[in-house]
Amino acid sequence: MSSSEWQKSSYSASNNECVEVRVGVGAVELRESDDPSAMVHASPATFADLLDAIKAGDLDQPA
Image 1 (spheres, one colour):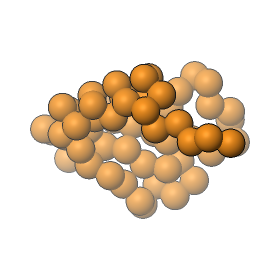
Image 2 (cartoon, helix red, strand yellow):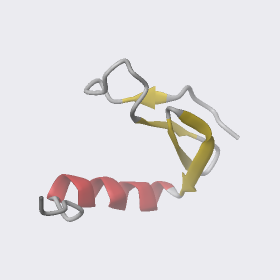
Image 3 (cartoon, helix red, strand yellow):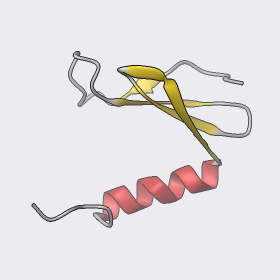
C-alpha cells in the first residue's frame, strides 16, 4: 500500500519511542516505532485535522 518511506520527527530520540508516518496510496499511515505491526490508516484530510488539533493544543491533557 505504501508509496514512500517511513518518517519520524527530527525531535524523536534514537531509542525508537516515536510515531512514524508515511504516505500510502490514498491514505496516510501511522505506526508506533517500537511496534511496527500496529498501524493506523487515515485519509489525508483526517490526518490534516489531527495535525491541526495537535498544533492548536486541543489534545493537550492537564498535568
